[in-house]
Image (tube, rainbow, N blue to C red; front, side, top):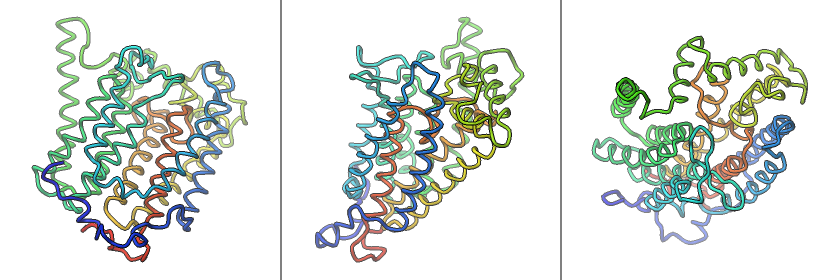
Length: 407
């Protein structure tokens, strides 16, 4: 990225003794132990729910989910062992990798249809969703780029440069189109910009322009439909999802029906649920995508309000531990990596649970560590590895500031 200060100059003396710069490798500090315990409990809980959700499905294999967990554990340990600071000056590389991953499904003979006309998957012996793996590179790209400003992104020109570059992955994913994953990219970018010291005024103007752009797209699409008889900018199901969110009684579309069935499943669970594998709404096919996007309905129906609270407590603990690790980081780059992961998980949790309750628009966003999908599970483990790396690879002297960027 031409014109930006080299992050090495902000992270201390790169020529420091090797023993001083190496960090601790696979250390097991109290924070890492807490993180791993919470993650283990969350993963086990998610596997129980996924087992029930996939038991009546012929298209989804619980064994495949276990394979995702096994591969994810290996990936987590490998990433944990790597010093995250090795990636500090590779923002351009990560941006290119992100775009390549997102555009892979467009290659003829490689991409496959994910439903609703979205081409989000590739088949290389097995189905893989490259857009999920792009989340990892997007976090590293955003963190390495914004960290160069030392926690004070107050120059309008530099801020606009960051925003434009961070919008590129979103624009690429919309060519599939995959709005749910695209929103995750945007929330990652927003979190990194906020934590990276962008001016509040710039952020508010960006938000207002984003809302105005959405309203303009709907208005223009309506004009196009009046003249051509069909929507061109947005898919019909995307419009229906937003309209049903604004007015659940607005029609009898499939989207409205699906939301109603999801809410029935959640409500029928009561306080303690119907019991493991005793749910009926998902098992009999009333709830759509019960293994992936609507897996929370399975949990709420079988384990009730108490089971939902247990899940939320585990998520809260996970987020709090990650924030604590971010605050204890030696440098801004490590902090932004952690907060980018936190922003991604927090948005996915709130959106996924909120959409099943009618509190958020319905989008194709899975629930971290719970929803079915080996690619999604693997990416979540990679995120854990990144956070463990930040926590482990601190200066051997244990002094804050050796690799610290100005804040």
